[in-house]
Image (cartoon, rainbow, N blue to C red; front, side, top):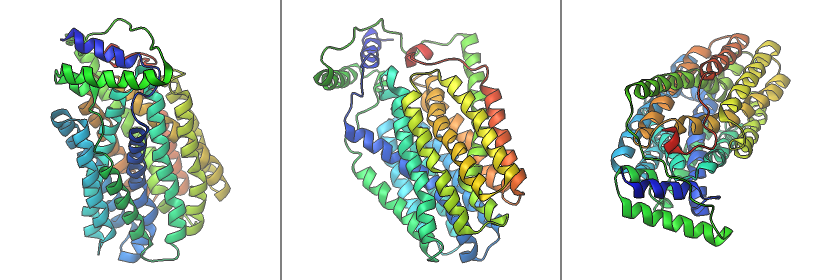
Length: 438
């Protein structure tokens, strides 16, 4: 363990504001925009794809499922690559894979091709999300992790919110409209990867690799950038040793925490993706028109952006565990109301509330999960928890599509309550450095 490395990381954590360029922040926000866009675009397009390819809803649902399976695979591949080759290299590679998958999706002549294309795009999306969350947590000062993750997730939920609006314009009018949606995602990802050439390396990756000189130079640059804006920097607090060896009891607790968080993500993503991906098909199968379903979901999903904005404001002001528990209870109540009332007005009103909680929970849960693991374990732990969690997402369309409206939404609501129960005994993380929490 190097005292110099520990001191450099403490220097970074004491900075009072974002120490990197606004261009980097915009690029990371764009990454979330297109990753989240990709996750939900297949759900919006699915009713039209069913007609275009003349397949059953249950068969078409496999395009959603394989996209999410690809996401799980991508998270693990991305974590492995990020640990060996670095976070920045992996973020660039992930976007190229995503772009290829989206182009192939736009050109799909049949369902089989589309399923394979969605799997490829899912690999890119999974690697990008998991490593981006890790990267953000590692480059941010301690007091800003929640805020910056909240900002990038705002961008992600703008990507989700825009999908039903674009779908409502394109899908009812043009049989090829769904192909335009995929092509839009591919073009955006190419633009992002071309502007991703000047990303700074992760300070925690440099620390883990023992690259003291590179780390010191990087932190010097960050301090100089902040000093020009705020003047004198806060005093340096005592540094915490980097990646202290685990005792037997600490190791067991960490593995137990990993398992609990993974299970919590499974249940949360089941309901989350039920709303974001399966809801258009659930509604159309229960008597709602495609255009009206997309319109009401579009209105409701504006809550995603508002919720992520709330995360940006409050995530570093209140204990993240408490934010999660409260939001999950509200989520369950809102989805139960949709299932029990079952009108278009309830979809718009309570759907907005449910979408608000998604916007609040996801960045807070991302930040909270990343905080609980050491620098060396963080990429793999994020891949494991978020990746295994997406198995719940993959199961959602298979289980929920074909249910009655009431049963489908009550099932989504129940998943939120189970998630809250799993997090009840989790620890507090607000304001603590990654090294303290490790």
